Image (tube, rainbow, N blue to C red; front, side):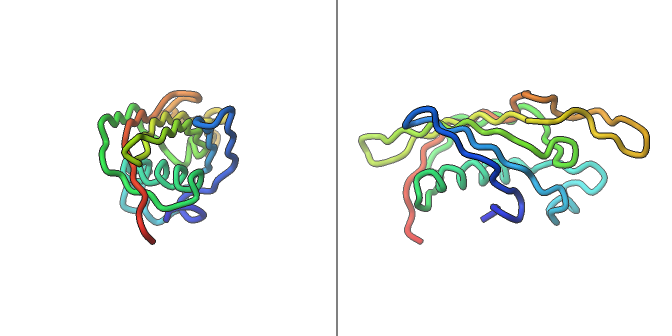
Length: 143
């Protein structure tokens, strides 16, 4: 589980019974960035997939696992130092087979460029830019 170590849940809102908007803040000091990559940290794609799954688990209140990923597009690099705040919109629908269809779209929620020692660094992902689009099927697992 990545929650509280890799990221912190900021808010969760649901305008209807199948759609949620989740806001999280990444921990740019997490040890994973020492290897991915120390000078220019990048959130690994597998961590984004895990983060989305954990958000779905929080909504559904039980453990889930991916059983099919029909489409996954990583659209831009997420740097946890420059753009630590993310917003993920999840749509979760139950299927007749007892599975859960998931659609997710993640966007960066930045507060502008990061200033370091009097210079302004370019961001990899601009505010409100989409960084992932995902369509998947999940099933419940036993703990």
